[in-house]
Image (cartoon, rainbow, N blue to C red):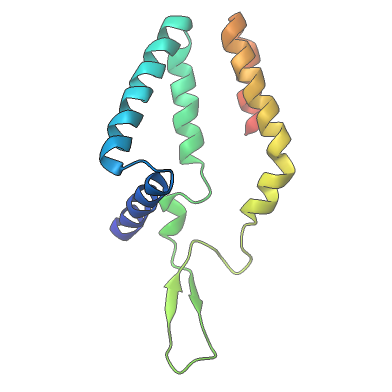
Length: 135
């Protein structure tokens, strides 16, 4: 688990640096944006706690979460002198995340549009429907 979190930390730092933002600037900037947007959401609607709950649940259901990474699958190269094993989160038949994302991309955009409309008009049921549509 520690190696997975270290890998995620390094990848996030690299993404920030590729975007032209130093990590020591990016992390506080993200924290301030999160706090500001949270305050705005709590002022705009009384259902903000439910949106945070749904957001947390959507993060937990991520197919590349550490819970799936803990499973002991491995990829072994057979055509070399060294028996080299790289742990991966995939089983024998890998989950095609990229294909599934490409097929449902417009559905996700529509669901997020419905969520934004639900917040702007104050219709909680429309927001619940859009989140159920995503999952």
